[in-house]
Length: 92
Image (cartoon, helix red, strand yellow):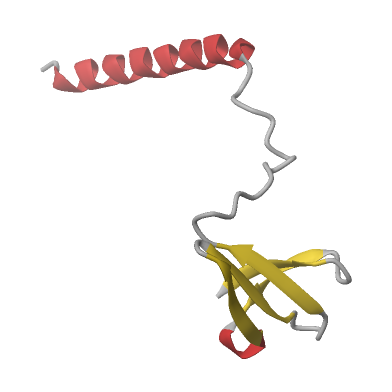
């Protein structure tokens, strides 16, 4: 199965074995898979070792540093509470 984008439907969908019409080796390391989306529109997918897709525009990089400090404080608080609870349970 392949995940393809249909520009007519404006959505991504799975392209199963039944929807694949043609697989072509364009050049060493680049493969073209063409077929139909579930609604019958033509779709194509380029894949292979030599194919370099564009970066995902929805990826904004790593989380900003301002979130690291509050998360560490929260983790330290939970660790402290957990230690107190386990120490209280261990005491006779």
